[in-house]
Length: 562
Image (cartoon, rainbow, N blue to C red; front, side):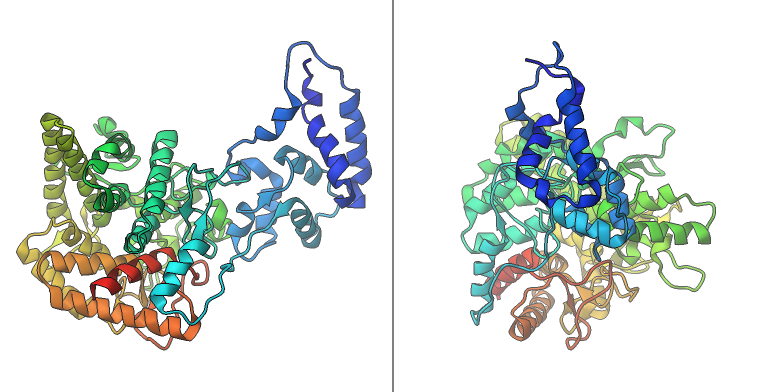
């Protein structure tokens, strides 16, 4: 038996009458019943068969703007939740089409009315970690935390979550999904705790995302499908290889190549075009990469913040479009450094301001160092497979990229590796710890490494470790904050060139700060104030989060080495 289009939603309405009609507010209960009668009166057609028992499975994977329509805009614009991310992570309790219909019939569209509607129709997430801290040692605390941060495989599609086939670790707090570059640093600690199966599950999840979407999104949410994050997948595979042997690298070769193709997409278009998506043709013909996002709209998870930033930017510079600002904000989010003076200029008052963001004009030294590593990892995997010819091809790609990084990103004047602004044909002026990546991946020569070591010692070293940048801008990826991943990269980069004393000093200061905060709060934080140990970290779009995946991972790893 087949049904006409008007009867398509009848099973949902029937179920809703049976299970949830009493939850519906009176202003639209009568209208709802009339619609039910309308659907029941529709004729059954001869050519549109649809089995009612399968309707519940037909849930679209769409971003929140498309899922919820006017409800999304009204929730965000009316500031129903303090954090814009809360609503886009909410779990719908009914078919989304039905929720949209109910909202269209809602008479009370005040802030109170919308709030009540959301509570009735969604499971609203919280940020509190469901974990009772005790007086365990910090290492024991972290080991216990893995269980609190672990999520089962996603058996169903609901809201904006992209389901993953295996269990995984989330960072914690408002970050309720797996995150791409976070997971590498989390895995460092998981390996120390013998959680090899969890690491493999996470690597398999990322391989699944690459096979399904052609790349690894920022996180497993539909609103992240326009962008990725720093490409650490090959490094994750190497963590797994530490436990299971080098053949693991060959196993994930197809996915590493697919990720490489994603980052290099459009390179064949670089004729007259100077840049296309994530690839940029440099002045002497070399090809390097930048961060990008395929969308030029406000980020759904930071909707109000992006609207405000774009309005300020356009008011100060009418030549800009809001779409340019939105894309640059999104590209900054792809970098993982959302946000930092790296992507900003100084405004008329001489201060770094988010409205000056120009991420897509920047050739980031960290991104290109990671892609060098990806090329080398692919070459190694081909060699394991016995394909020497293709291995050599990727080694050549890596060597060419290395030369370009040294050419465009090394500043002799500063004695440090810097980002490069290809639109201005010159290096960016801002120092940042992105400059340690060429040491981490052993791209730098000995003289360059010595100068980087000196700059870290004089500019970046603080009482609690190394500061992300020396600029206090109010953005979270600037002073006074220090972040676990950058401590790890700096420490290992220095060790690669024999600077063990400074590396050890950074490690000790960071571990001491982590222990101090833990003893005071029983928390592992997303970021820390490394300049004034009596104060908390801050800045950015949201409060400092507790959990926290990459802090746990780096602490667990460093504490076993000290």
